[in-house]
Image (cartoon, rainbow, N blue to C red):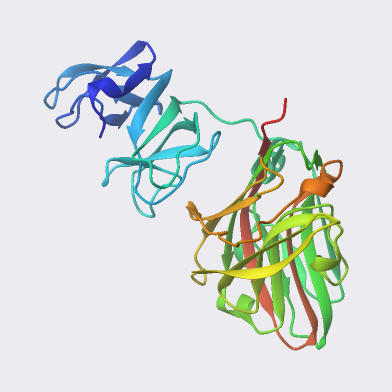
Length: 325
């Protein structure tokens, strides 16, 4: 919930009949699907003016960061802004983050009902055919575009078989962006229990491409890394400085979708966020400085050396927005 003084800029552009009592600054979902901020306090059944455009300041969920251009959802039960709707809730999309908000900040500036423009977007390519994607594999394993083999727009399932052989499988965006373009990468993945077999590696992030057997052999990258366990690691290589995978001390939950962000706006200090929390606290930061002229792609890759280990990871979102001039 916010106060009347939280309004930064925006016209009163709609009327809303309150289903329940509404306080000034409350966020509501209009019947037309737009989000609105109440401009006054009213009782149930009364009309109230709501803002549906412009920039407002909302209470932010504690302990998470929100990056400029990212989606903002309204958590109804907590009355706060966050990065994704809760499972089994009526939480709704409010707009996009207008300016970065750190974990310690209590509020976030939001551009109401706006949507970010992504230069790479797995979901958009599945809908309109733009921003194509390339998938590849070596030896066994399989890839499809939905859970249980069912088609699903904007989703891939990477699956390694139990054949005792080296295997690699990956999906990359066809479109590339320069490493110095101020990229913010977003992914949403779920790893199953079988995806955590010892010897199975998973990498998700930005890279110059995939590889037939070893992601770390790619010339330039900044990526999340899972190494046969639920531990979340990060690493990078810009062709000059190679930062080996380091444990963030955060663990994923198996068979649960998690949000992964890579903020590469500062190439000398690439930052990693797991479910909205900044996790890369290495004394030696991840870097892409020497990769400034390199074309990077969004990528999700899984691999193993010769063994009977199996792996399964679902990818529901891969997208990149840039903040280059």
